[in-house]
Image (cartoon, rainbow, N blue to C red; front, side):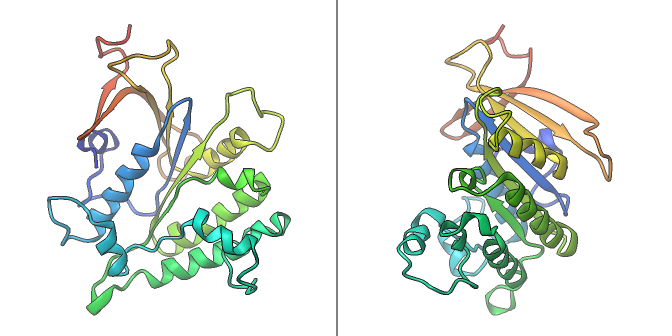
Length: 255
């Protein structure tokens, strides 16, 4: 978890907004550090017993606080048809991509509704859905429209009904690579209209720099506004113990 990013977003594990849909995207850079940040952020925020030494994902799974669907591992059985229970199989779209993502949504719905209560009566609070990464579905033959329908259903259940939060990662092609096709840029544009906070990571326009790894654009949308009413750009550097962020123009490493 990165305190500097919490300061930028004006949020802490002890005090964060509910019903938020946060879109994380990247192009010519790796935004995985933002997914790791939000996973740690929400686990700390929803479990006040987490120690200052860090978050244990294994313990979170054992306690029922974290439900994990490993798509790559579980997909093998689906492709080989080891499980024929189509109605309950979250990855059934692998056999028939055109059929949509209802099975995957039903899995999400069951998981978030069951995650409110932990072992021994512990309460975790509102659910958080984190997807890394959604654009993989495109390479499996799922249409942009079907994916956007899936995220709308998830948002209605997780954010609106259960007052929880969503964080979704999308990896984008070069800007002109798939503008006229059903690609990741089209998917990202659709998700931008659904979310209320967007974090987009890119490599530096000037190319490689040893001291700065890229730039992060942040868009905020307040309330029911249809457009983003605030936008800022930061440079960042990821290191072993976290990440550093600089308002663009304040770092001497980039002219």
